[in-house]
Length: 180
Image: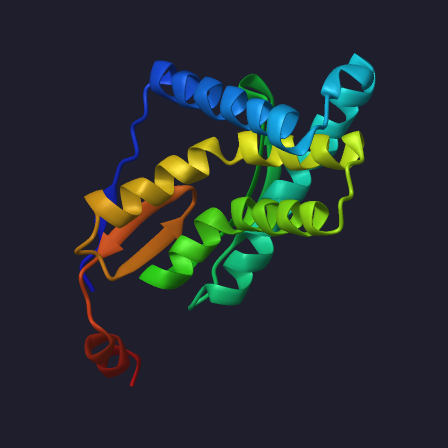
């Protein structure tokens, strides 16, 4: 198998701009359409919610990755202090669809939870703060999804290995032949 390295080199400015757009858009939607205001939540509670949401967000990536990965490798959990970043990663080979699910699962679950809350008219500010922070945390996931769908549309398989991403244009027939 020939694996080509894939570099997702996003500038911090680009990520910051996307985060601000997503932050302000969802903040506006939650305030105007849903009618939930976050001003009643104390700042320390907001910080606590944020510190709970991010590991849960990464754990969702882990669960979905573990379901869709082929040829499981190492599992990585942790926190990068200088980047203030939690991570969860399952090394292995992913089919295109499985990799896309792995990337956007936390965002989709936020959408589903939002729809359930709206349907049942559940307007608890703290629950909406959880949903909001998960959507903001999904900014890079959304960028990776767009990148995968459009920039790497010819790649059929992805391989995660020690936080490095590789792609291959193999089809199912070649994978079956190599496994036998």
